[in-house]
Length: 221
View 1 (cartoon, rainbow, N blue to C red):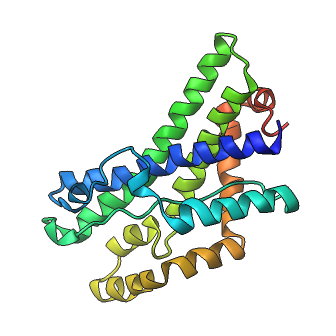
View 2: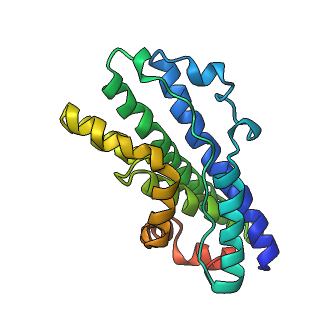
């Protein structure tokens, strides 16, 4: 599979994975009483309202270049965070717990669904490398996003999950780091956290898809 085709498939799979992640945050917030995301037009699968200049363009394109010239193994990115106002919730901290878990849970569900579709296609005799590669990338990126976002580091979803279990004073001090969000995420990538997450997601993908599946897709073989 050529690098150009892989890049196009990877970018497409990335959008497929990140948009429902953000919509899930907004939808759960809306169901809990917060109309902010709905009023901002973010409860839609149309990618345009969700695009982030850094996470949706700069970072993925940079990683594609690194893949081409330095062998970086994966394309990664994010969408514009959905606005959430926890003061609409009866229990602000509890509400944020559910809202934060909604995105990673959606990605896990998407990964399982894509793996199931892929195995079903193989059972029917469908072995088109591009179709299988696209589904494989959805599985892989879904679990990369789920695992990475569950890291307990502001502004990632895992930080809100951890904050729920901290004493109130520590919650506030801990979440103040969110203002340095882009710097924190960049530091995690440079320190190799993304590589560790990728290895874990790849192991899950292999288990779900099977070695034969991955080789047929032309993605890892």
